[in-house]
Length: 280
Image 1 (cartoon, rainbow, N blue to C red):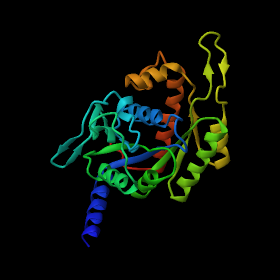
Image 2 (image 1 turned 90 degrees about the vertical axis):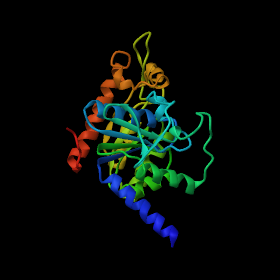
Image 3 (image 1 turned 180 degrees about the vertical axis):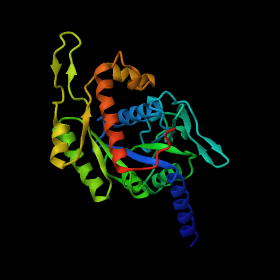
């Protein structure tokens, strides 16, 4: 009986928090290493730069890399009177991550499903997000516990699926589209990452991982194609330095230009689907 009461209180707090958020967007991938966190962090930063109030939830419990990529890796969570306080990265952008809870960046989270679900419920219900236009949720790869829990706890959240062009990644991307559909989650679109490299010496385009696979998968699955991002070596430096590449127009020109189209696609999707954003 006591357990049912606790579950009801958890659901009440989650609903109260989510009622203050206009749009919820989950960034997913069928497999790891495709650039999902890079897309999530830069999307959140780009929206905040457009004067939206944005929260970014790092729901990758075992590999929480969002703080490192935003330059706040040394921050620790603060417990306020009303709950956990998210870390402010810049005006209009707040972040919460398991990394803020760990004593050391080298600590491993060796948890089974129930414990992971517990911390995700805390992030959704106990974090004082306040009023947001967007909550961006960076999910771990695959279609396991964390994506399933988020999908069930946040009805109406839209999904962005990140893939690379090679067939092994596209196979998992199509499975992720199926996952979203089976859970009633609208698919905002597919992003094709690492789609070609321009040689810095001769200027020739090189299709390291092929090009066009993400767009073809989107067409096959009947979902929008948001755009493709090329490989630019300076993006690695941006991530390691904790600086979103969207702020580096001069060093990442192709990617910044391509990414602006992806942001426009997200804005258009949410405009068409309605919502109660709080943009000033």
